[in-house]
Length: 410
Image (cartoon, rainbow, N blue to C red):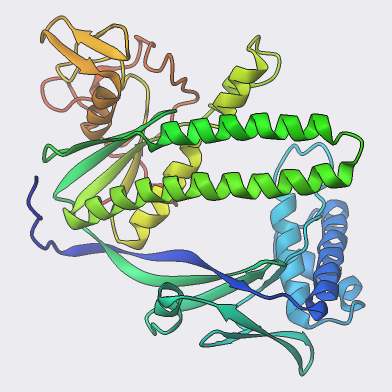
């Protein structure tokens, strides 16, 4: 077991944000407020589609008079325009966005939170009070003066409050390479620590089971759309809870290990995965459904925000070639049961272990991410230069990558 690394000077001040979710009991007053805010968002979207503002401030100026007629507090107008502008920023949408689900979003200047009592405005000097249900975990964020409160989002069941803090990232003593596969997450560190999380296989089985449940519900209740919708929502929430609990366990352990031993995290920049499994690609619906439910994006998102909250530096690297080359630089031969053989070293590798070690050993994070990556055939492109992956003796790239907004470089 590796020993804890000594303290290192902290660098790169950053702002980390985390959303804390509370339960509460909804009231009748909120029902009408949900509907009014939904209508305001849709009116703002229609105005945004017509005027095409350059920023949300132009949208506020164009929609202010129309939204003021609802008679709500001014902060609802600002929030509705912010939601509408964010919804219309996406390019090449086939039809205009439309808000269906009831919710309320307010900035940090419009609400007050006193312990577990939340006060939100309706109109001038008229408020609604919500009693939140929280544990010690929730109170640790509310009562800590070092955390700044951000926007609040209210749904009929939950209240999500954003908390932020300013922290500094440490100088890493080593690196932790993480390879996210369909059925496992494999991590390798420069200090020799290696771990394979097979809980992703349980997530695949859970999603397969609920696909069968949803298909059975659709067949048996096709005559009543209302019952079909209620059952699909019920089992969809149950599926999400079961998958999220397993995913949070994996990502928390990885982020905690990186923070404890002062390791920088390296992840693969997986892009273009969904395009590989579109309808019309000649693949079976079962296979496309399985691959499109792969949770690689959610796993990387959780690792990213948890590492950022703990001050752990993180990079994204090009995924091409991670499963095709040995650490010595020679191309490996695929065997059965996800095994790889290196003729030069006479070593048999586990495919996932080798990929995580190659990600860990990436000399310099890449400036441009890969345009596409297939889990089954990743790294088969022999044109990928070896200098992107191995350090020493292989002409590794010397120019550092250009920092991106969401990537922190130590």
